[in-house]
Image (cartoon, rainbow, N blue to C red; front, side):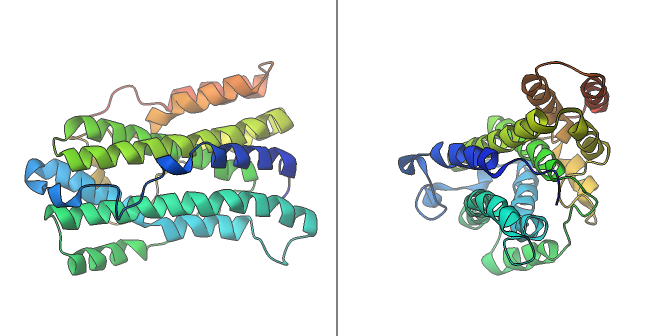
Length: 280
């Protein structure tokens, strides 16, 4: 894949991300929450549906991880210089994947511990969704993978924060706080990388980023029933990826020293794609 930022630039972003969470602040699905106190009787039907929805989204991690394995391979198919670049990115993706897998495990554990679902029923349900394909095969520029993830992570963080404000089960509140904090760190990494691409390549990445926004769909948006489900949980908290667009605009604005016509057009386009209303 051409037009990569330098290995040193990527390594700086990865090192910053890995240093941002000290060991004492890390958490896991097995010991960090009071599962014995989880009680789904505190939840409305809409809140239960929202928990089920985000569990499905987080549990699709194998599909997300495979995107990076496919498009940034760490094997003999690339020359040594590209391998070195991708190997630095791999340091991020394995940590990111471990954290996202913790999210999936914790949400599934909450469903079981709170009395929402039995283990076997939940496994069967998640397997049905998890086998659905996920890919970003139309992307041709590396910045597009990071711009997509920037929007996805920020939108998910916003949703967790909004859902947390709506629920009364203390265990779920604690879990959503942890999830939102992780997604905020993930967003910061992707924003850092997108900024480095903008500084390195300027106008030439404005078009690829615009294409990401023009065709943006949240993960699993093509599964049967996704939009009915998304509309149903909108009564609990607004789940709209365009809520993340203002953060993308801020990243672009901070990354460029001088606004050009291409950058101005990108910002105007992103602004035009933002929704101003929405149901709650």
